[in-house]
Image (cartoon, rainbow, N blue to C red; front, side, top):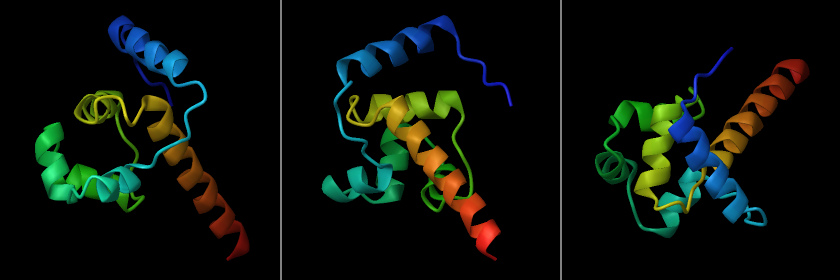
Length: 102
């Protein structure tokens, strides 16, 4: 699967990656809980649809690069691209492990 990332998004990603090299990974669900936000409220703030956010939080879908950009912007960088990608990779790994044990 190829993901197209334009130059602007790449610069944004690298800036946050360098600035947050030692930062602990934050999951979106933890961010919502820590800030007292419901998924619906956050979806409105990030200009996302409720179903898109819900599918991600439940682990049914990943996120497109432009959707990740909206989340990073809405959280003022508290959640980074790296956080979101790591969360998706962890879920994918868990799904593979669950299939093996079934």
